[in-house]
Each structure stands twice: as structure tokens, then as C-alpha cells.
Length: 180
Image 1 (cartoon, rainbow, N blue to C red):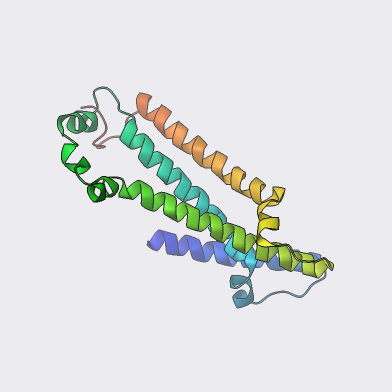
Image 2 (cartoon, rainbow, N blue to C red):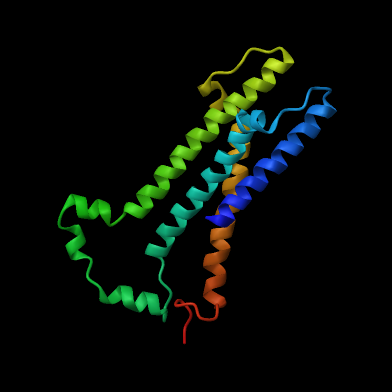
């Protein structure tokens, strides 16, 4: 959490400085740090990244539950357990997938946060240019929104794929997943 906090602060400070450089280049007044933190631009950048991270982790959890590596200590352990008690009631069945549900719920919240804050940022830009603001669904249908989402999603899926592929051939010392 300390690394997260430092990265979040670094993102906020670097984003604010970059924002002010762009404002000066356009002949506009600089924003205070607080103004930048309250802007759609900052919120959009945060939610856009969180969206892709939660999607990645949700997919990773599903892959980790479904894919098995022959000879893996973790696979042997999983093969010896019986999942039957977890399927006796609906609540236990839901609980048995609660991590996946939680990650995808966080993905959906981040997706909506990205869309809402992206709309705010876009409307701030449109107002400066003298145009009418867009609705939420209008912004949701823009190529800008989907470009930002797919740009992040493809990198997350690529990193999950590389982790899965490379874990077949490479090992990490002292990892419980590594063969003895």
C-alpha cells in the first residue's frame, strides 16, 4: 500500500505538472494542484488504469483456477481436494468464486468511473472550445473512450499471456509453483 500511495502521489504530481505545461502551451492559466485533483482529467487517468488492472487480475484469477501445469506442486494439491462441499448451497457456490466476482465488480466500477470522469474531462475541453457538452452515453460511444480502454486492456492481456507462457518454461527460485 505504501508503493501504491507513492505511485498515486507521483501520478498526481506529474500529471499536474504536465497539465500545466499543456495549459501554458495553449495560452491558458495554470491550475492549482487542488483544481487538477478535482478535474475530470485526473480522475479519468486514475479510473482508466484501475479499470484495466482489475480486468487483468480477474482474468488472471480465472486462468489460475482453470489452467494446470503438469508436475506443479500447486496442481497436485488441487487435484487431491474435493470441491463437493462448496457446491451444496448457492451461498457457498457464490463464495467459492467471490474473488473473481469482487475483481470484476471493481472492474465495472472503474469502467463506469472512467466513463464518467472521461465525460467530465471531455466536456471541460468542449466548453473551452465553445462547443456543447456531451451526454454520458454520447461520450461512451466515442472512439476516444474506447481507444483509451482498448489501449490499456491489450497491454494487460499481453502481460497475462506472457506470464502464463513464460511460467511454462521459466522458474523463480523459492516460488511454491516451481518444481523442486
